[in-house]
Length: 423
Ligand code: SF4
Image (cartoon, rainbow, N blue to C red; front, side, top):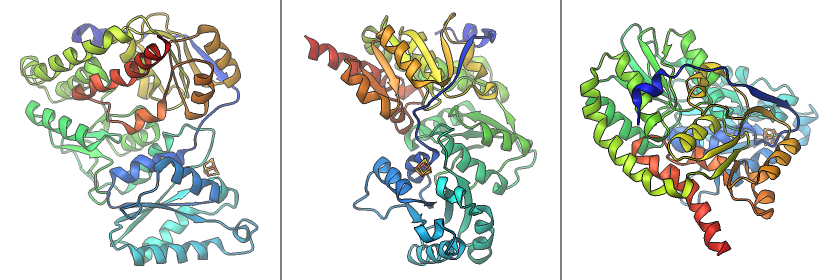
């Protein structure tokens, strides 16, 4: 891996096909699925309809042994028709919930399409309820509604709602890693930062919502996820500085990501190489196993999770896949510019979606692997194409050195399976 050459690549003006047609997306409520697992003392109360409740329950699965940490306050017909006071109903549900669940430290009121249609002001509701329950329970609100967004924007909205209540960190230097990571990945990064001599390091979101990280002019942000534009801008608004970087997917992405922090902490190159060298070498060997299954295979990415560009960069540069089209819901240069220059020259990049036209392009190209949302995967599989659900990548630990080969395997496995089936 050529660390120097990769960071020195100039950001090119990549031509982008912009499409604004029909889209196939999930709404931001989906973020609750991984956020409730991450923040163990938080509860997510969706204020919505039965449709919202079904979405969350089917996406998160039913927890049999544990008390769930998400639920839906269902707006009935009387609420929707304006015949009942939805605020009173909401207060009653929150009362019941908090009486029954003393383990809840932070309660998120999550807005939905129905709550927005009846103009239920959840920020006012949170203010009112905080007067009664804070400091024992902090009540925050954000919106998970909308099909004009990507499902990962639910995390952005959730973290964004926490930024105003983060304690002030002043000019004290610290590193804040922003974006949900699996605990195991977080621990690996923490060890590497410790060995490098970088700290204090805070992860946002924290494992307990009550342990909010401080933010101030000394805070340097490293983004772990490429869909947190609102959160980053709010953190910058509180004085923090973003360290622009590719994302920690694959050996190359992880190395450059760590290197950005190392540079900000003036860690000398030799020490950096000594610390990351063994893990990077191990990861490279692990990747080799899957490279032969992936190299030269054609890849088509539909816009869904917002992870598409970093993923495409990893699968092209480290696994040798050929990119047919890299679709992404939207391009936020603040978040993704460092990645754009790493895509192979001539990559066909599309932003937004006109699903029928994109399906036509996909069928015409007959890629070996298609990464797409759940709604498109089954029809494409029925047409004989191999697909991977992009949502799975948000739920899986895929960042960092120790996960690089697991990430490659996620794509190699279905290709191998299809090869065996077709023999
Ligand atoms: S928030 Fe809107 S898009 Fe999401 S499940 Fe509820 S009604 Fe559907």
